[in-house]
Length: 127
Image (cartoon, rainbow, N blue to C red; front, side):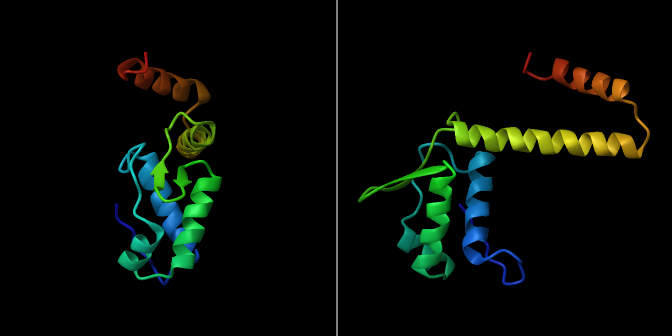
């Protein structure tokens, strides 16, 4: 797990921590069931206040990415939970929207784009 804080970011520090942890959970760098560092430990490692890391963990818990158990710490929840699934669906929609916008920019028709997508699906392990 790696967290990089940028003083130039428009995001507050707690949001930078939250977004980086969320990204690492979504892309599998932090696996489900993995224990996260304690709030105090993470605060010390990245040089921020405990209040800041508490806010990041609280937000991640509210969004369904982690669960915190008193005295046991925080763990990453399974990816099949509804809230995390919604995050994955949003990522898929964003990717497809980008593909549509790119196709439009270079004049590819909807039919051609559908064909490309179909070919990709056929060569993937989703079928």
